[in-house]
Length: 414
Image 1 (cartoon, one colour):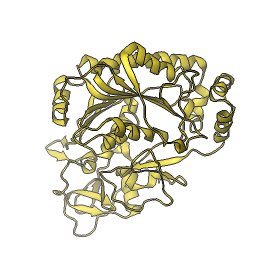
Image 2: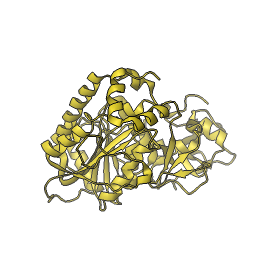
Image 3: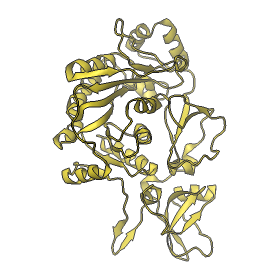
Image 4: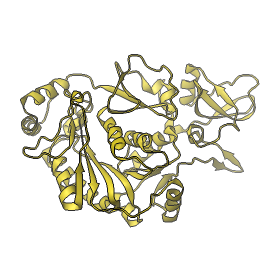
């Protein structure tokens, strides 16, 4: 891998010889593979061999080798999510500081890994707004959140200042901001080609605009989690200092164990608690995270799911993609149930007959192929399952069955 010379000069000095050499060696190795089980769908099945627990996240594991997730129906059923191990540190952070129901925002959420984790880690009774400003990426986020199936998640497509305009306030905000992507070099050669010092400075400027736009939406006393997938101090320590000194926040410590090999700040003389994952040192890709508390005491009541939904409807939220309660689609005089309903934890499925599929049948269903349902299957809408986990709907017409799996979710190739 040919690294940019400016990156080599800056980052080798930042890391020091020992960390730099370990980082260089890691670039020639395969990325680590980790997954996190969905606590509301996982039934303690033996799905993978040689699982090694990720110690900073509940129900998360490293895999010895990468299987073909695309061909696993349980992946599409939302039973687990493939997620980089460093980003799983968010679970540990949330469980340290969030112990009662909250209204939380994941500001830049696509493709959805941190949002699915947040809803699993937040206390019962919480509501999560999972937002993605980029429209194309918002569609990916919507699919992943619907497959996870938790009802107390609103999926939105808004710019940061839209939330301030609509008078939203949150107890917890995660800003996993767009960055120069230095921590992705091992996984994405495109990130290497796009890197430049000018882009680092552009990202820092963009990040501060995002921070200034969303900061008024955090309640006094609220928790703000700032993260990037890059290493440099421009986008990390300098932005954390900007939040603390210019916006008004206290930087919070998170107790970590030495054996986790999480690196702190690399800025000389700066002893504030921040957390840096460096591939070759921690068993992960690159990540930076800091936790802050906004100064002041909040007098606002907690917004629970029902009132959050009402607030979303009243204020329109400009681009609300899902209110957490999937509904059938009206086609002519008929209401067609959606795959999102079959995958949702809140929708009653007892009114529909269910048909269990084999692995081959389930793969063909996800490919949107026609299937022959067993003799005696009632006519009408049928939920198809794999290992008792719903995948979606078919409509049994007797002589044939229509596959209702969404076209934009379908497996492209078997």
